[in-house]
Length: 329
Ligand code: SAM
Ligand code: SF4
Image (cartoon, rainbow, N blue to C red; front, side, top):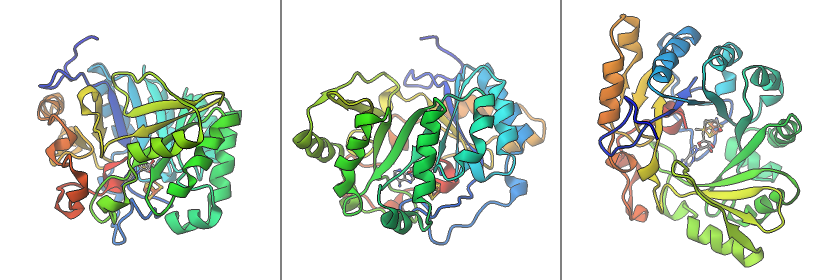
């Protein structure tokens, strides 16, 4: 591994940037969107040109992977322009989306050189989908997952595992991997401001694996250094499944990720207390490289120094952070 300017004090080399395009979303997921969410005025958001210019500075420092996220990245009016611009950079470009609008963007995603996409889906039941997201869009999202597979994309499905909501559907999700080359990722429920988090609602790794292995013969797949997931496969199935174990077993030691919020603030961790303004100095024509480097050097060893190992005892309102939609997941 080559060491770059974006190496922190724990010798982690950062070459993966997640850029939030907007904090606006066309869904209202109960575990994500605070009821009183206020969205950023558009003059405060990075423009397409600013996103490109700032991304270039990160790329010159060794960033070779960029993920677009949000809010919902595809509700941004100039999402296509942004994809085309970033598609010209020497990076693996990808996206996390709720999937609702993918049918309108699949061509431009291909044009921009994207070959993979993460699509969020927490239930396979249309009524429950409506309850979780407050939008009647299950069939559209489900169709768009098939569409992206047909178009040859590598598709990961993000499913937030919520006790009492979808723990009864874990097996159904794993069954999807039988015929389809899907990669299901169960995400442990994480605490953010106003997201109705409770320790008791986390459906953790161990229970997930117990439930699945009681039903299927599963094998552990190899996890890479930078993986946030613990990967498995049911013997004989086409796809795979994995668990993102942020709460029960954080995976910070191999972290290579940095984040830019839609209003151009840099965060070195999803749970970092601090953020560094990049867009303000950039607009004033100041040097932002030093700010970027300092932000990396300030990165804490684990979960922004904020999450407790015994997560059951945590109070999400005591965490100093933005809500998930305002950070960019
Ligand atoms: N709107 C897009 C989507 O839903 O995929 C992108 C942004 S969303 C914030 C990114 C990912 O974060 C989604 O997979 C979502 O399910 C996940 N997420 C949101 N809030 C979460 C929470 N409290 N705990 C765990 N995952 C969460
Ligand atoms: Fe929107 Fe994604 Fe949050 Fe759901 S998880 S409210 S789709 S940003």
